[in-house]
Image (cartoon, rainbow, N blue to C red; front, side):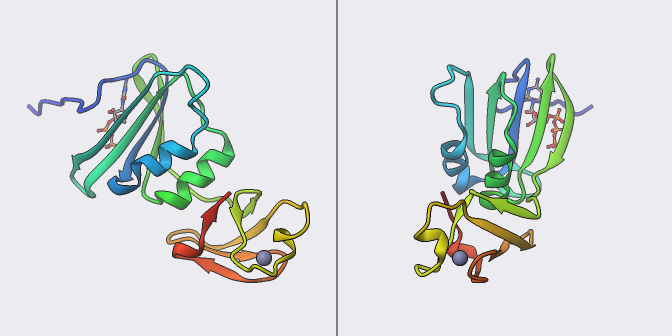
Length: 151
Ligand code: CTP
Ligand code: ZN
């Protein structure tokens, strides 16, 4: 019999972001709109994981992610899984995935791009999801890796 022990205590209802590349755990926490909502948040990092080596995990009581938050997580931690917890059970589990179009989520790397000069929302076409490769709708600049800066 395998004995299962949680490394970070269980939550009753909410969202668990699991399998975060450990070094990006706090980057993920930073983009979540959790600080002013009075929610219970549990964060673990450098936890051992069968497939990732070391992983981070964030558990938020009473929270559902917005599509914008889910897209940002997919950019920072493409291997993360999102678990919906209801009454202590994981009722839904899926890998994060970028949507095909990102509006108002990342900044264009091209200093001459109109989106950096006019009050318009940035807009990127997702040409590849993992690792992310984006193309600006306005100036057609392509971006990947460190060029991708969240707004
Ligand atoms: N979890 C939690 N609170 C609960 C139930 C689950 O915080 N009441 C967390 C677990 O710690 C785990 C994730 O939600 O990080 C998914 O739970 P579960 O599917 O039960 O765990 P595993 O089978 O170990 O998940 P995986 O195969 O995705 O690693
Ligand atoms: Zn641009």
